[in-house]
Image 1: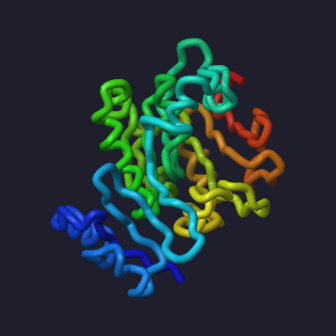
Image 2: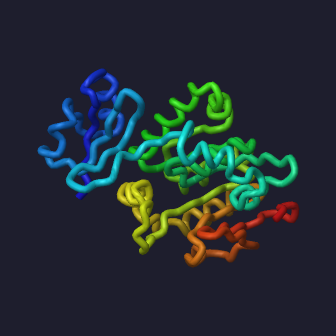
Length: 264
């Protein structure tokens, strides 16, 4: 059974971490060193640099956190293929198009960040409060970066909510042109990221068994298209078949055009 507490490392600024614990409805541990002894499985830790989620115990992977300024995400922004990459083509970034997007399964925000870097305005919807807290921290830190700060503040907007309820509650003038879905899929292979980030997301989000409901809500809401990201060999979500697919080496994008002007 998962059990998580909030702490700081080093044990400083207790007011901020205590407030986060109250917000998330989680226990607050003053000293991270006592968390394992207290039978917690995870610790949400505010360090000097960032908020991170640590899995406790022997032989556990390193911490998980959101970082838009370096590592894989920054490399993908610079060298990921721009508007020619499969994600951009699936969403409809052709010519000067910069559609509004709701990413209804935001997770750690990587695809949303790529879309924002290509000009889209993206609402990130994340229903798991702990994942949303990590994402919020990553966005706040990135907003202070001189290179990508304006992109973050102008084009990425985080909302903690269930994607189904959020989409169903939108007025017509709030509906996005594109709804993007990347529901969790029960991977079998044991690669380095069924890897730590994917393993963590699955622990806190589950396998998104309600994904067909989310697709149905998206199809009623999106103005131009719905895009569903799947592992290449995974079955399609239950519901109507996609209009077309964009295939990448390990990934498939099922695209549901909703008007005749949707471009492949």
